[in-house]
Amino acid sequence: MSIEFNEHDVRLRAKLKEAFNPKSWHETKTHDSWAVFKVMSEMVEGFENLSKIGPCVTIFGSARTKPDNKYYKMAEEIAYLLTKRGFGVITGGGPGIMEAGNKGAHFSGGKSVGLNIDLPFEQSANPFIDPDKLMTFSYFFVRKLMFMKYSQGYITMPGGFGTLDEFFEAITLIQTNKMVRFPIALVGVDYWGGLIDWLKKSMLEEGNIKEEDLAIFKLVDSPEEAVAHIESFYQKYKLKPNF
Picture 1 (tube, rainbow, N blue to C red):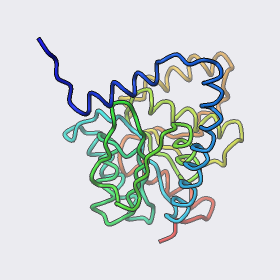
Picture 2 (picture 1 turned 30 degrees about the vertical axis):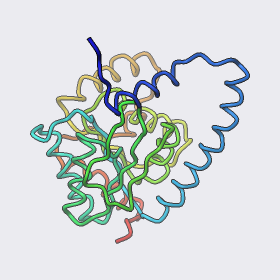
Picture 3 (picture 1 turned 45 degrees about the vertical axis):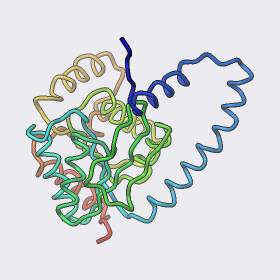
């Protein structure tokens, strides 16, 4: 019995082979040296493109969330409301919550930005990103830098490890004064409530975080609350997005 592989299978097998094929120490050093130039090019391109877009809020969440899910609909509404208030919307560019965020921004007539990532299984960009505002990165850390540098706030919807990674990195950088503070809304009391309880009962009681660290973000349960948290922060500091 013969097994036929389509073009996608062949590309995937080649990428996996490259990723897991052992290299000599010399090959590793040579590859790392040349990789610096690719990292630099991604950073320069990101800085040049995103600096022109203006103030944006990033929406994070699971790529697996379906359009009939309540959190998909909430993300879409949040994006719609944010863009009506002058903010652009940035997402990771993929499906699920990311698609919902770009969709809400698109149908409100606002700026819809997608920072996609090149993965072995080839995450495709959703169709609601502005054609001139789609970027694809090879390196997660460069992509994360762009989220941090060009976001005026984070909306963290229900998601998995990737969403937690972005959330905890942001609050860590703010906690350690490595990044200027900006508003972070954690959306979904039912979904995130257990995590917040654990932070209070374990981390806080053990003295590993302070009470004020929990004020870096706000747990909300509706699109209106999420957008109000972003707006109130900038009203407090007398800053506004560029319309």
